[in-house]
Image 1 (tube, one colour):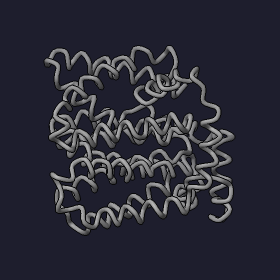
Image 2: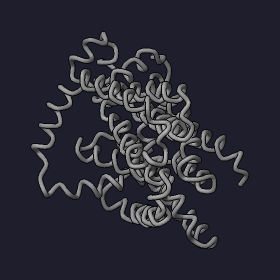
Image 3: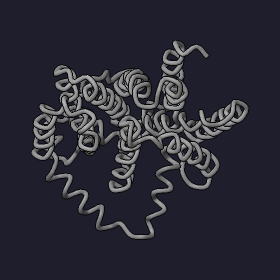
Length: 338
């Protein structure tokens, strides 16, 4: 396939799958009705309610409230922009050869589609996560002040869309620290900017998040270790339980192959950044016991690593794997739409 056609095709696939059966989009669950109600309140009341997504509330306020799709337009537009930003991120971190396949996997992801079809900050999370990594990597290599300013703005918008996205600057700081001798000339202004971003997050979200996570962690038991397996099934196939065994197993195989392709991570910061951008949101998802918006933040990295792993196989095997991946996604869509 012509690589120039991959991005337009990905946008079309994502939009079509999101808007399929639009009558279902108008049937809000009780949780979604609660989100809409909070979004219509003054922003101060939204903060006092303990919600951690003020930017998402503002997007819902600005979105049209009439029609079949209604407020879902905000999520759809953010998702389309997120797919476009992911093309840049994946090309930078996963490489030009793996990026097209990774982008198609991301655009058709059942988890992303299901989150866009509900009232969730997940599409906004996708956009801001991909922008953050693309800007950070470009700044680390080039050092332009404008890139640093853009990265700082995106980082603030990210944790305003979902407070747990503070993991973005923290993960990136660890990469900058680990490779400080390789990129020493571009870190002079980076650390003060990081300190300012972290201080703002603490001022806005530390108290409510500390309270909520204390309650969550108190309820975690060793028996809930299986939650990590369900989380990977949800991340890779959009479904969990026994229905996801085959699909999740295939994604696990491709992921391990992708990690083998990252064996040069000590020399290449891109590989470490790609692996870190998968592990950090996955761990946070486990700690938050099921915030799917955070899990969506791991999707671009999972798709990038799987696409890198896929390229290690001979051509005939790659064709067979793509066929099984298509069947896996179709199985997940059947669960989603029925």
